[in-house]
Length: 96
Image (cartoon, rainbow, N blue to C red; front, top):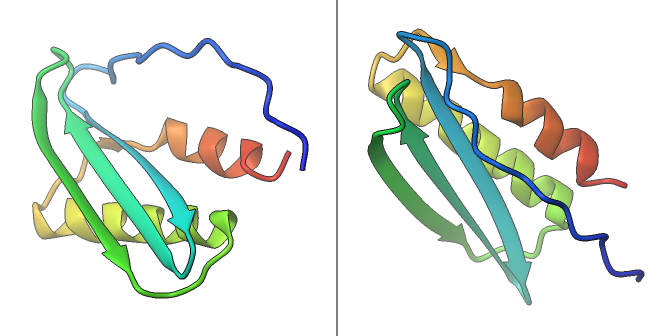
C-alpha cells in the first residue's frame, strides 16, 4: 500500500444559519472507530462525539458508518440546515 500524499486542508465555516458536521473514521484490527464534530457558522463547536464497533471493516465502510452516525445524530437534534459538503469529499477521496 502506498502512503497518501500529504494534503493541506483547512476548515471552512458553513453558510450563515447552518451547522457543519465533520466526521471521520479509522480501523484497527477487528474494530472500527468514528467521530464527529458539529460547528456553527461562527466556528463555535456545538458538540463532538465518538464511538466504535467491534467489527472488522474496510476503511471505506468505516467512513460510511461515520456518515450514517452523523446523519442520525443530526436528525436526533432536529438540525435541518446541515452543510454536508465535506461528506462528498471524504467519500470520494477515501478510495484514491
